[in-house]
Image (cartoon, rainbow, N blue to C red; front, side):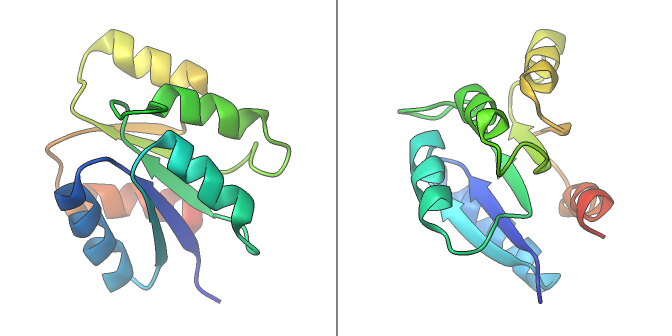
Length: 123
């Protein structure tokens, strides 16, 4: 059974690129346009999400809010979360990790780096 990754980003270009890269490695990919959409999709799934990749700056519910909500959920407390953001400041990285993210990658990024990070948590 393949593993499921939830990609959360308000940029259709980023979502398309990530989906293509991840599906090419055999992962199932679900997408959400912001944190609120992600939480709604996660609550309606019959199966669990194995990993979340999220942007930080999104409408409705940003990445920090999403991470905090996921960490408060019993079902997803241990789900790995990778932040993929254009915010490269030390404060942003520290805030993301302290909110509960497992990793923090900065855009633009190489797909090989992202896939290495994903495999660190899923393989």
